[in-house]
Length: 467
Image 1 (cartoon, helix red, strand yellow):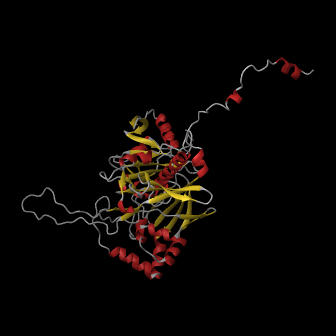
Image 2 (cartoon, rainbow, N blue to C red):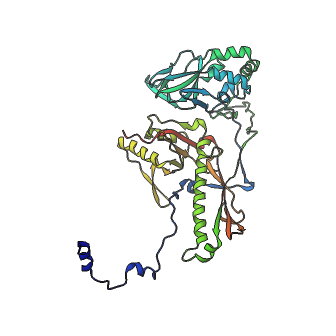
Image 3 (cartoon, helix red, strand yellow):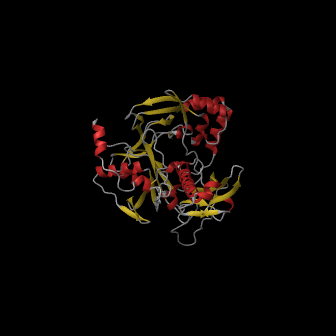
């Protein structure tokens, strides 16, 4: 007899019903279907939603004269970088210039330059004779402080340009020192090359001459047509006459759509509805996924998403890579009445590490029964829809919300047929020959930035720095 047989022989006989058999007569307690994709969706909860009749929302603004404030796009082949010719139209001097052949020639005349961190690209007071297009890297604009010390006026990053005024001003000088913070790849376009080409190309020569002939338009600090006012006068002074001009072609936002067709077999819908209704559970999870996609679009959509619709003048770069208190202060200072920050959870953690280094403890505020971190009293909400790139960088969004404050608003149209939630409907589409029920689940939404300073973004934030 083996050892195993001795052990079996010594086991006592079963004296009661086993658990495996008992489960055949028991009612199993079960949970509702779970879904890992569901997030807090703070953006959808905090945006004020505006009812849009007719599916279109028009943003009327005061006439603005600011042009050429975009970014330049490049193409890379190996270690060689070239500017897309049409992207040269982002330069103010070449705005609305449509001769593709001339733009292509200008793009070919751009010379690539790779510089090391710390190298000076332009010195304040020197003659400016070229435009710099920053394909990759960071550049600081250095000026002189009120006491003669060095101060950082701003940080430029991928797609930025500087020195564009040299194309129309032959006596231009550098008003600041440009210094590379990191290793940079730039393309430079010399003024002499532009003038040589203009001597042979009538279209470019006429375009540049037309710029010099345009009378100076008086604007306020925000680029809007100035309103003439008089103040502090006495007696019978002549009061200036004025009017407020509007944009002739205001931007219109059309409601976007997210849809899917939910299919449920009639056998499942008829027989397997206890203790939970199968159709309701299928619909609940589908709506959750649709709302997740809606928030993703509100952040990332190229037409109306927050990251792509932030004015370039409201985009700033971190001074040291990781998001520090100084960067958050600068982001706040760009706008009045900021209501909230949106940041990827990893960016929030990176900001917390920077605060720890300085011995700072960010406060928290209560929002809807939840305690969320805050900076200067403005809550920082997590949003995992903000992308983190392969280079471990992301963005932090700061915004003012509401129509009354000229902020950011969400757009929807409630009251649509078969609506189950505002601007979300479920329509019965029928039963096919395979006895499958179909439901069309649709959500309509968009977002609008009423004035440029309502939305700001801290870009290229490093989230993997631990020292």
